[in-house]
Length: 99
Image 1 (cartoon, rainbow, N blue to C red):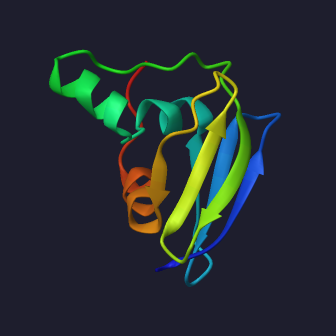
Image 2: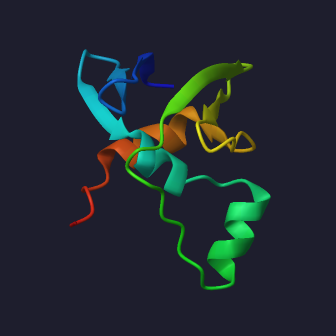
């Protein structure tokens, strides 16, 4: 795992991750919610329904899942997705979508 720390910036609606070596990357709460890989969200994507999250959505809590990653709890009450460390790193490296 190259993620060394994570910080939730609720007021800005962002999650900051710090990689080994000190590089910092930021993900919006809406992007994280839209990237959920739980069974329900995955089924919607496979059925051709793209997930979009309101930009007002906020990350309320972060719970560790062993050494594997974190479970994220969102203000829309969605809390089923587990975000492995490698997945968070991949999401943070992806170019931001155009508005």
